[in-house]
Image (cartoon, rainbow, N blue to C red; front, side, top):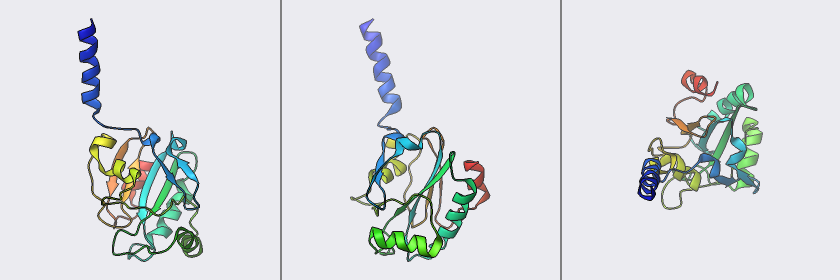
Length: 176
């Protein structure tokens, strides 16, 4: 009986690998508070790495429109400023927050500036890009404004390249 139980436990460990729950993650908001991803249970989530001096920066307007139309109890967008691509996000968290508000009226949650690649990659982006952690897929952040979609159960379900509009019908279908 002990051997059977040991085999079952080993099989469970092997099948789950190193996967961890999306809801175990946390980040700092752009104003410095701790944001626990457990507060997102039951919601679909779009995570997007942002930058203020990028050719895709006007996507902030589309992200805000998407958030106004679908955000609330069932969907949230979370922006993660990053300076990883050609130093296109050089500002401080305060400067980034002001830029987003003044230029695009951003109301969706913005997190503190992080790294989305390399040795300094944030735990959130480690989870998003590593199949061993998210249990679904491996990816690489190609540029600013790459979009990750997480379903209401905390599963990574899609990745969209930076040039994909936030208002793309495929994205809207996934978040509805």
